[in-house]
Image 1 (cartoon, rainbow, N blue to C red):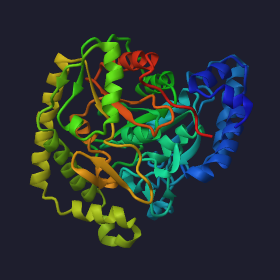
Image 2: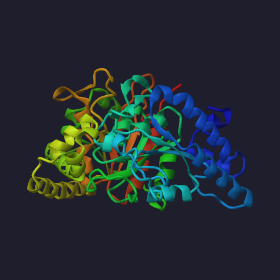
Image 3: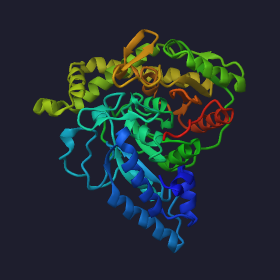
Length: 448
C-alpha cells in the first residue's frame, strides 16, 4: 500500500483529504487497486476487481473538486461490495457459480446508488457463502476466504470477503448483508467494526435476497467514526447523538455459550460503567430455532425452481440445506414467524427498561479451516451451523446491532453485540465510543 494511502487509512480521512484537494481520488484508487493485487493472494476476499469503473468514478470525483463542487461525505473512498449487490453491467452472482452467466444488472442497487452519490468509489466485488447461506465463506467455486489475523482460520460469513478485506487493510469500507449474523459473525472473527441495521433501515432494492423477513445490509470498517459515517450515508440522515445510561448484559443463553474471555471483557466494561445487571430475553433457544425454520423454509422456496431444474449446479453444501428447507411445512414456518412477532415485543419491552443490551457476537474465536469446530456450552460443535448461535435470536427481533471488536492485542479477535431499539442507534455509538476510549474496544494492529 502506498505511503499516501497508509496515512489516509480511514474513510473519513480519505474523504476529508479529497474534498479539500490535498489528494486526488484517482491516486487513492490506484493505490487500493495495487493493494488488492498484492494482498488478496493470501486472503481471497475478492471475486472481481472493478478497475475501469473505479478509475472513471474517481476521476469524476476529482473533476467535481476541481469545479469547486462538494462530491459528498464519502468523496473518493474506495468501497467493496458483497457479491449479492447489483452492479450495473455485471451479473449478480450472490456467490453462485451458476449465476456467472446471468444477465447483467441494468442498474446499481439502491444502496450503491446512495453511496456513489455521496462520492464513494466501488472497487471490488467480495466473496461470500453461496446465496448467503452459511457462516464461514467457504465457497465451492470462488474458494475459501481466509482470516487476515491468522490465514489458517476462517473469516466467518456469509459476508466474510467484506470483513476480511477491511481487516487486511485492503479497503477502508466494505458492505455486506446480515440475515442471521452474517455481518456480526465475520466482524467478530476478523476483529473489525460492523453494523446490522434495524430491519428495513437501509434500502435493500437491488440486492439478491435470501430471507426477506430477516435480510439487512450493513458496513464493515476499521474505525468507529467510519462506521457512523457509513451508516449515516446509508440511512440518508444523521444518527442523533444520545447518551446511554441504562446498560445491561444479556444472560442465560448468551452467557452459557461464550468462552471465558468474554467474562474478562465484561470486567473491563464494568470498570467503566459499574456492575451491570443481568437481563434475560425469554425463550432465546426457541427464537434461534424459529430463525432456523424461517431461514430454511424461505431460502428453500426461493430456489425451489432451480433446485428442480439443475440441482448439480449448486454448491453441494448449499444445495443440501436448501433441499432440506423445502421439506419444512409452511404452517410450521408461519408458527415460527408468529413466535418471532412475540419475541420482538419481548425484546422491545426489555429495551424500555434498558437502553443497550450487550452480548458476545460469537461463541468462540475463529476456527481453523482444516478443523472447523468451535466450543460452545454444548461442547465442541460444527462451525458452519453454530457460529451464528448468539446472533440469530437478535435477528429474529429485527433490532439494530453494533458489532464491536474487543481490544485483544496479540490474541485472536472476538466481538460484542451492542443491541438497541430501532431509532435509537445513537445510544449504541455513544456506548461504543466510551468503551473504546476506556481501552475495552478497538481494532488491533493492521495485518501485514
